[in-house]
Length: 180
Image: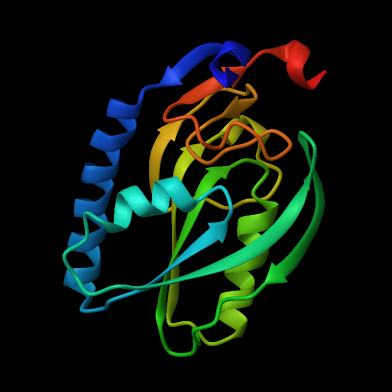
């Protein structure tokens, strides 16, 4: 049982679902005011559960796509952002809603946002399930944030440690003995 590796449940499945409903409404209202429909782009793999929960709440006809970007080695961001898989749709003259599981150092999102701007996106907004501002090393902020979390190693709801724990239906703090 992977749940035995969790020290504390930080956010329950119900809390996450409720916040996704609120975020989806706010995002949709903002895009409706701007008269745009974004391409919703998930950063693989961590964003998948959050993105799925979010997009099922949208009533606009959104297109979705994915990118695979890496910058982590174990528990640490290594600072070198690598695009493993680019999205299939063109972002030229399109609004982009970038979906991320967590804003940590900010390096990945900063680089991906620059890439979209360089490719001609009309605007790039970021929605993140979690924000960990105490770890930020790059000046970037998500336009929409689900929850701010403390500087703990969190897993679940898409977030992993060595590709495990993504399937937990909640966000939990991983026991230190697991990753130290």
